[in-house]
Length: 632
Image 1 (tube, rainbow, N blue to C red):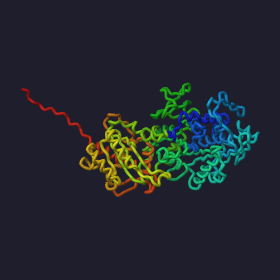
Image 2 (image 1 turned 60 degrees about the horizontal axis):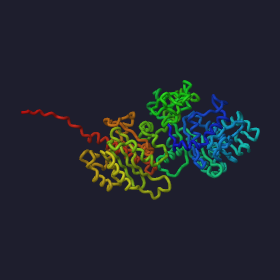
Image 3 (image 1 turned 135 degrees about the vertical axis):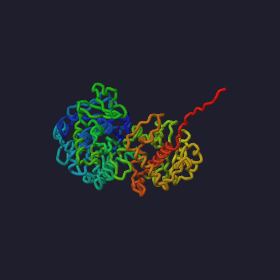
Image 4 (image 1 turned 180 degrees about the vertical axis):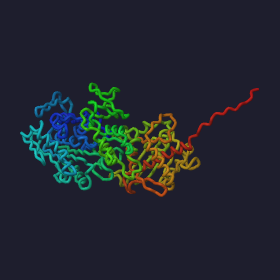
């Protein structure tokens, strides 16, 4: 799986300086470590696309992103990639100057790059200051050693004759490349460096916690000091963080998804790129499934066994690319939505290595999932494991465009007017969120219809839920869709729910406690055992493989799925299990936590309404009876 937030458009890619950056790096840089050391650097298609996205430009030539987050599995050469970008940022014309004229070229160290007409042409940064930060001195060496090797050997070593001063603790840039320095440091040391950096790299940011995280964030904020001339930006590279450690990576991850959820409206100018695979803990021992998951996580970093480049198709199949066409035998290519790079002939990770580490008797499953599948693991008290949530998501690509209105209306592309659906509602006034969630009866697909949640910024002070907007949306659903059951938590919306009861009860087949109960009101605070039974039933169905139930087919009672609205997913992820004498209930992590669960509770009510409808509300057709009679 591969999440990119926001999606970079084709037009923005065409304006990118990343194509020139890839040419520059592949022309002048060597592999700095490992078995391929001293061979010319060559990017996979996946990392080429990443660099193109990093250097995407607006129409006025300004950078789109001030901060870039790259999350990949252990061994994916994240540090090496950062080193090559650092060299480009220090020695090459890496900021926009003008749009190329016909026939314009760039020549450096005897090599010439021909610009396409209209392609962005760069300029050097004067007095560039490149900072390489890590949590320890050993970690900074992962990036700096590759830079040092390239400055001492290969094409870039020629610059030592014109002022490139290469040392063990810093590299001084020659004036003909703009001047400046490259300097490795721990996060704390880099933060005291004057705030003149033009590019900063934070390596393995899942290890930045406490004071190291604070120092790194201070450095990242300081990049704005040279925004006018240098347009500084930061690259954060990491493997998946450990939940609850409050690391720099965890904060960036949550911020990116808050943007996707619409909780943060200000443009964060952050590019989030996360590749991972989902495999439940109990299936780690299945070697076939594990190998496929590793292919998904490593992509083109994995070396193929047949000397070919491969694709991973949306349905999970792995196919070989014909180098003459760039397509597989079925016509799939990387240009198609949902198609990802698979193992490649230029890969360097032998998947037998991580497989053997994962399958060792003393291997920690949680660490294996984080390091080698690069996947989020669940907290100990999470209601649902992350792997189960991910395995039941539908329509993920619809929610990564960055278009908030498109995201809010995406469910309308999936739910038809004649589909039987149930509704669930969980409300608040000014602190928690308020959510209306639907559930398609035939397959248990939960979809977020409307959510209002307290903002994470200054707007929170006087924020209130728009009650009329929710009333209008409920009435819209009854007017346009086939609603057969609706359960709503009563507090603190009883008067409005009374109106819904009055206007819609005669259309509803069942109520929370059978046909003769009130049809909509669900007292979650008083009916704790009912809530518990609903949670148990829902959680049990998440343990089974997601099912495809065709339209007009008979409903599958045990089926469940989540339409992958990031707001709905986050609320399911935030639910924490707390034991009670009769079983358990779910809550936020703490009463004052900003990580809400109201959409999950609304989903529970919608799913409970579905189950009640399938149990008590669907009328079986009475068999036709033949009554004999005499004809006279």
